[in-house]
Image 1 (cartoon, rainbow, N blue to C red):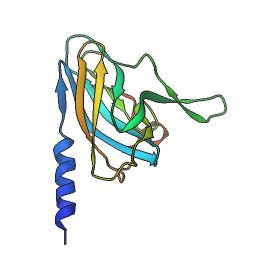
Image 2: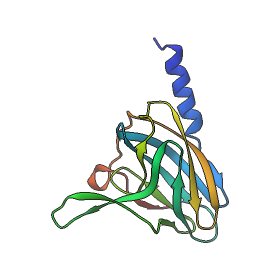
Image 3: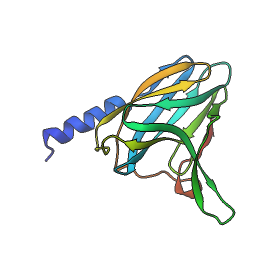
Length: 159
C-alpha cells in the first residue's frame, strides 16, 4: 500500500522531469544525485532543435559553493579522472548531447546540505547563444546508470 508522501514525491519527480525549453534548446530526462554529503552531479540530455550549433558554457545553483561543467577522462593507467571542462559542451544543430554518469555532467562541490531523494534543485544553465535557462532538476538517489561505455550513457547522440 502506498502512503501519501510516496505518491506526492513520485508526482513531483514526474512533474519536474518534463522537458524544459529555451531558444532552440530542450532539456530532457534531467536528474541529480550525490556521491557524498559534500558533492553531487546533475545529468540530462540537451537537445539543440535550432538551425545552428550552441554550447553549454556554465551552470549555477545555490545548492553548492561551486558548480562546474565536468567530464571523466581515462589516464594512461586506465584510471578515470574527473576534470573541469572550461570551454563547455558543444551541441550541434539538430543533435543531442547527453550529460551522463561516467561522462560529461554538471558538478556540485561543497553542497550546502546533502541531497535528499525527491527534492528539487534549481539550476541555471548558460548557453553561448540561447543564453540563460533556469530548470528544476529532481534528486533521484535510486536511479541506476544506463548501459554504454563504462556502463554509462553514451556522451553524444545523433537524432
